[in-house]
Amino acid sequence: SIIALKAECYYEQELYQTSITTFSRAIEVMSNGTYPDGRKTSDYAKYYSGRGKNYSKLRKHSDAQSDFDEAIKQDPNNAEYYLLKGNDYFIQGMYNSAEKNYNKSLSLKNSAVAYYKRGNANYKLGKLADAINDYTNAIKLKKDYTQAYRNRGIARYETCKTGACSDLKKAGNLRDTKAYNEYQRIKNKGECE
Image (cartoon, rainbow, N blue to C red):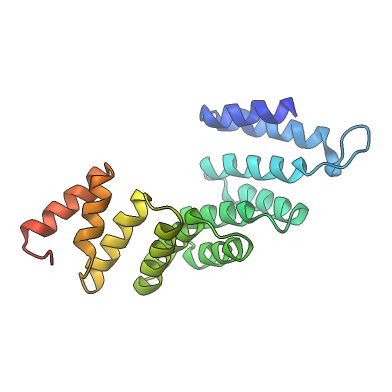
């Protein structure tokens, strides 16, 4: 709908409260997942997830989770909704809940982003081997995934150091200055293999 397109534009412009109001209007117009003429629509779930993303940006996590739950209720096989729900949990520091939602997202669809995000949750949980595996899977799906190379390099450095420098250098070559600086720091310490 045109209302939802406006809401997405507001989100992209970081006008989150305006986007929430606009998504709420779209939800109201499409009450119970039907157009005013009675036809069913799958957009209803998208409106809830869109509004949830805005709530998450504003750190209104209870509202965000409620909207993600409604989106999942409307479309339980949409991997994106579990990913968004996991992202909101991650922002709150609820890494176990984030990981659980990333697992569900990955059970529905192989996604480099979901592997990367789950890797970040596993890293925060101290499960470095799982994090490295997730970053590796993300890289397999997206060969130039800069952040996955950087984070895998950091996780490798914290474990056995093997492969850390090559990952950080690769991320640096993909224009990640943070990774390049970390690579230089480790290299200058003489810790690159």
